[in-house]
Image (cartoon, rainbow, N blue to C red; front, side, top):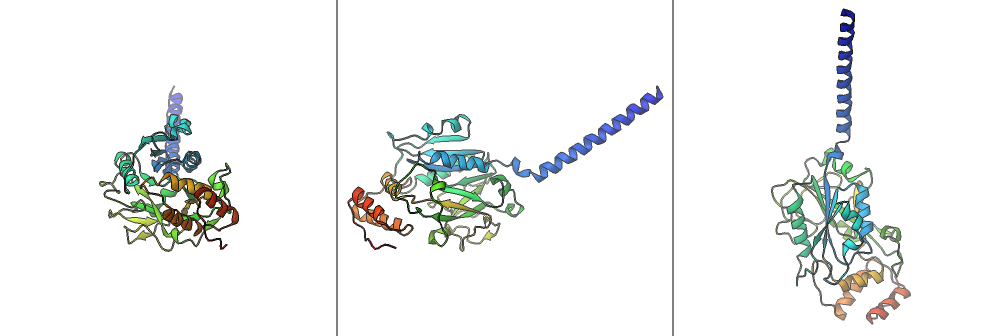
Length: 316
């Protein structure tokens, strides 16, 4: 009986040490993969984007975002995001916020949405990104957004500002049904607009980062801002970072797409401002398009046919 008691005590000791080793291994794994504990969401607002919204949602789901808050600013009799995102809404990955038919004579809708999203959700998330539907985050050296934001270099950061890279129309004139990132593969690395940044804000801050802000790139709230490399930015209010940095992350920005899509975009109106479209304004918009895209006969013919506007036919 004494022998059996000693064996039983020995087994208990072995069991205790086995459990201790198991706990240590688990702690090491959790420390190594602490990014899995982060909660990260994306806030965005859009109008007449049903052609692109599923690709946008898929992209950020693959990156590891936990949720997308999507502000629907479509017209009262227009399309609805829910018509193409039903599976994501059912899974609670996409939350639709009703801004349908909401208009202003001047800017402000986008900033109201940003303020609302941070105000209602900052206590739920460690980080909140504020990107548009034509902006696709590219992470170069990490497998997910959580792994990227878990880097020690961001521990003191309250806002991570990520630069744009603009993309051309790849010489295309019409929408052909393919995804945005499949069609437009020509980065404009020297584009002057690349100095712009978009913000990913730390949650649980005492003040709403977007308070009284009129700029969707950056607010005037004094927080510790960093680049995507972890470098502290001295001018925390600036919507730019010069020179742009792309070592770890950047936003692929498709703000024109094809001339067909660009004209439709201008006609629909920006989500943050209403504009009266006369010939002079159209000419300004078309000049804007060709600052980023090359002219050809097909594009010029399309413009003349749709808008009845002749553009200088000097080819670049």
